Length: 166
Image (cartoon, rainbow, N blue to C red):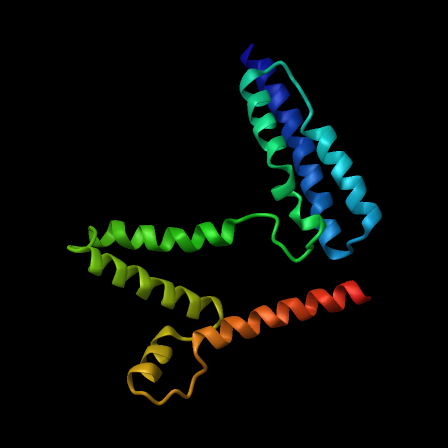
């Protein structure tokens, strides 16, 4: 039975990754026709019933999340995964583990804020050290992180609008 389950799982995983590659291709050149086709393919893939209870349960749980998972079909700039978000959260969790936690709620909050600032600066190619030095010295030669984030968001919106106009 274990061999049969492994074969069913392998078959489904192959189909799943094929579908994922189609979604990636869609993101580069989106079209309404392809979006409709990908919605149908999703329904076909996630209506699969294999007889392997654990796999069928997982497939059914994924099928229920169809609307969220297929957001990319209406907003192609949305990433297909949340690995970036998870990696960002992992930094804070790892820091807490290494430092053996804070002594107070205020200390934990301060550490989380500091870590968020450092990671945000890093994400946007800004030296956290230079940013903090700029703020502490009150020179304000560097733009605020809020401005950097806003500009990055506007750039993304403009790229998406240009992509849909073409």
